[in-house]
Image 1 (cartoon, rainbow, N blue to C red):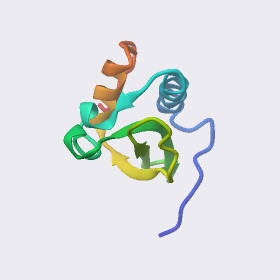
Image 2 (cartoon, rainbow, N blue to C red; image 1 turned 30 degrees about the vertical axis):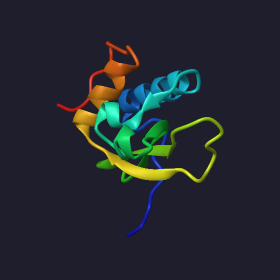
Image 3 (cartoon, rainbow, N blue to C red; image 1 turned 90 degrees about the horizontal axis):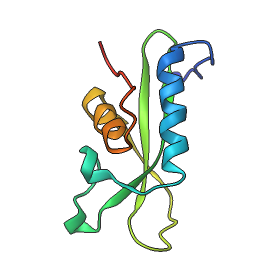
Image 4 (cartoon, one colour; image 1 turned 45 degrees about the vertical axis):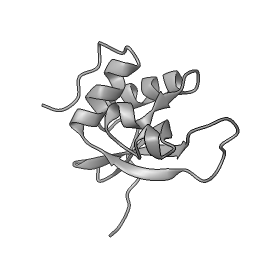
Length: 103
């Protein structure tokens, strides 16, 4: 599989929304289980620390980066695919009501 970096002019709305999510994640903690990704809090949980877009400019993929929950947790981030329901939940939890994901 070849990975293509998405140009900034491609999927402009999605990329703008991803930038807003990342800006909000820099100042807040979002448990991944609250948006349907990652291990449940009972298993130590994880927090969403970022979202990124990659793939074909025509049909790209959105990925989330998770880190273990807890103070001082700075291990390597796990990468998980994010689908429309996850992205809607992320925007809802971060109070980004103007976001529109999917068709």
